View 1 (tube, rainbow, N blue to C red):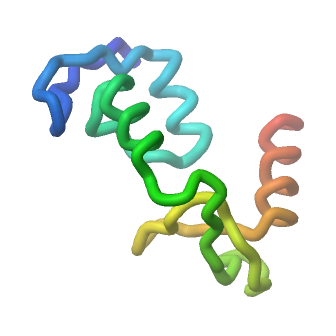
View 2 (cartoon, rainbow, N blue to C red):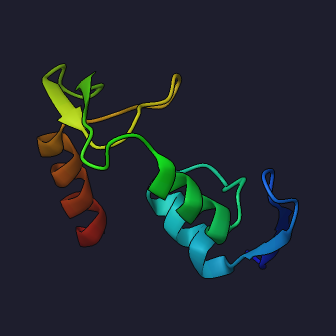
View 3 (tube, helix red, strand yellow):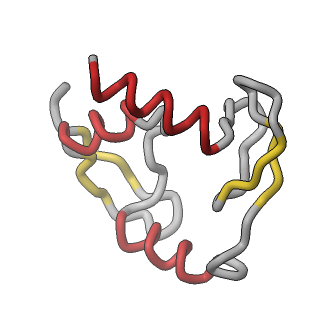
Length: 93
């Protein structure tokens, strides 16, 4: 995967989505960023309550849990136990 130039939706500056970052985002099942790193940092700092947690139902086991991010519709979310298990499987592969 070559580096990709992406225009930030907030400040309109072009930023480089490096091959290394692309791999990291892919491994974490994250979407391509729409904001440059500076705008992402500003958005994160401005978010409500830094220690806010959101209740979820694990898509893997059905257990109720909380996560430190706002879940997005259409994206799977896992409880801590399932997430840790999937991470250990990824490391072993």
